[in-house]
Structure formats: structure tokens, C-alpha cells
Length: 324
Image (cartoon, rainbow, N blue to C red; front, side, top):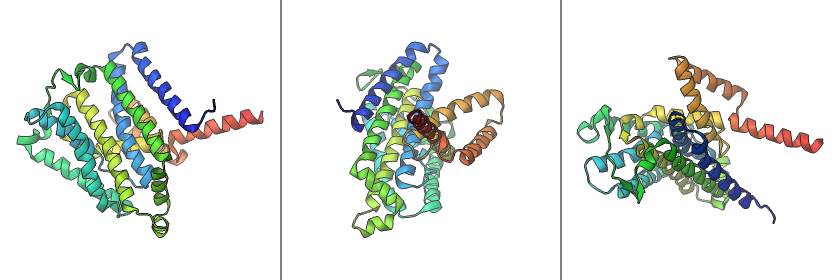
């Protein structure tokens, strides 16, 4: 049987799911599994920021807004008992996606730094609302949630115990990466990549460019919202920190460290960033400085990120093997 690229990607998906499912079997430490789960959730968020950078070629400093809106949609629905948890989860995915698409129809027309500043402004507007609307949101203190015993027929404890939460987060991350891989290889993915490279030429040959770019922006917001849902299901707590620009900045750092032009790069960067942050936090209170220095080193020495360096290393190894 011939191994086609699609079949290879599917087999890789199955292997990755199986490997992730085996991790809790060999890792008994709840602390390590907690770190892995949080890293996987961060990887989903970073993937959302990364797909926007990869397909549209623009940088967002406001994706924490979509992450936080998903969290607050579920949190406020449960706190004020206005709807079922399952309905709130669906809305937590629909609302950020629809909002991003409508907003994207306007802001994707704006290039470069101005786009980044607009996303930052939008994100900070939601953050300020969460801070000021204390009677509704609990203000800067946030609030904890009391989930029902089951969500979509699954025991809520499944989403909150480190070992099982890791499996859920890992499955979501791997399936997202597989679906994004299929999207990138599709005609739509090739069209958005062509628009990224030369939007004027794409318009000249008859393609609409605003809607595809807005759709990519909405897709990236949907992925950020999925990360928000995973976060609140695991932590059962929401605060304005989920909307703060620092979270967007961290996701962008993860993309740069892992390699923004590679689909797997942001996820790789998220895992490296998260564990590096944890290790440096135990060593020094100035861990932010260490992360900043590391980011500078990676940017200068590895402009394609760790993922790009690994790809080059693999290519050299294959070339060496072929030569031998």
C-alpha cells in the first residue's frame, strides 16, 4: 500500500493520540501531570495565535480576549444560572468566533503594526470591562465555579483530575493540529497563503481577499476559545487575568520560540516555554528576564525557532544518510 501524505498524517495522528494516552500510565506524579496539562492548554492557545501568523502573516496581541470571553461565557452562565453548562460551552465557542469574524472584516484591511495595536486595544477593552463590572464579573478577584456532576454525559472530574485532564487536552491539541494540517493543504489554505505573500496580486487575478483573511482570524479566535474552555473546565476559576495582554504576549513568545512558520512550532514552543518558566521560577524571582534573554537568543540564532532548527537538523541527517 502506497503511503500518501494524507495517510501518513492520519497515521501520525493515531500514533500521537496513542502516545499521549500512555503518558498517565508512566507518570504517577500529579504535579508533573498538572504541568503537562497546563502546557497542553497553552499549546492550544499558541496554535491559535500561530495559525493567524502563518496564514495571514500578522501578529495579534489580543487573542487573550477570545480566550477570556470563552471563560467568562461559561463562568457567568453558571454563576448567574442563566443556562445549562453544555449550552454555555457551545456559546463560549460561537461568540468569540462570530465576534472575531465581524471584527476581522474591518481590521484585516489594516496592515502591520497597526493591526497588532488594534488587537491589543480590543483585548484590553474586554479586560477593563471585566475589572470594572464587579457586580457581574467579580472584578479583579474573579470567582470560582461549581460545575454539575456531568458535562455532555462525561463526569466533570474527568476534566479536573490532572491525569484525565491531560488526556482530554492532548486529544484536543492533536486533533486540532491534524485538522489544521488538512486545512493548510486545502485550496482555501493555499489561497490564504497566497494572499499572505501578495494580496494585491491575488486581488488582481480575481480572488476576494478580505473574507478569507477574516475567516482565518475567526478560526484563530475559535482555537483560542477552545483553550479557554479547557482552562476553565480544568481550573473552575475565572478572573480578568484570562483577558490580559500578557497572556497574548506569552502565546506569541511560544510561537516565536517554537517556530511561527511551522504548524507544530507554536505547540512545541508552548511546552518549552511552560517548563522553562516553571524551572526558572524555582531558581530566581527574575524569571521574566531569563525568558527575555532566551527569546533574544532564539530570535537571533534560530530565526525559524526550535521547530525550524529541528527540521533543518533532520534534513541534514537524511542528506547525510543518503550520501553515505
